[in-house]
Amino acid sequence: MVTVQLRHNDVTVARLPDTVAFDTVTEPRPQLLALLEESDCRHLVLDMSSIDYFDSSGLAMLLGVRHRSRAAGAALTLAAPPPLISRMLDITQAITILTVAPSVHEALDTRHRTRRDDVQGADLG
Image (cartoon, rainbow, N blue to C red; front, side, top):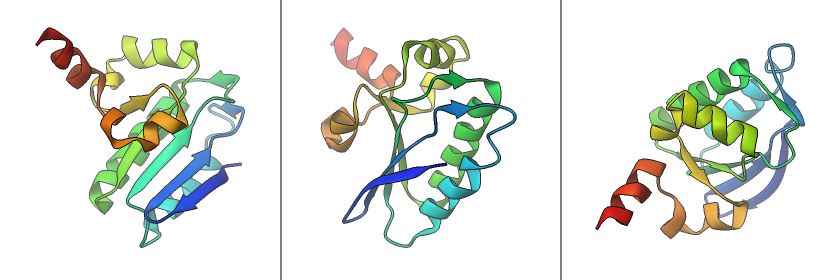
């Protein structure tokens, strides 16, 4: 179950469940899409810090939610992904299209809402 942690102005912070996998992904997906459909949600931050198990179905769900967020004109930021999920994002190159922040706090700070490739480009300068 997705737990809404914060709603402030046009930002919603939601915590994903402990397990996001093939047999559980059908529950959070419609909940996340419903949050995006709320007229005042312009930035959805997904707190991933409590996830214990995450598989490719979870990644597919995140990519689908990203697609819907863009269609709705909303930003999507993944916050505090555990190391195993960060590695999956790197290996699959999903990191190049998903916005990731090291913490919810930093996800809410617009200066930190950048994709990894944008951050790497800034490091080269």
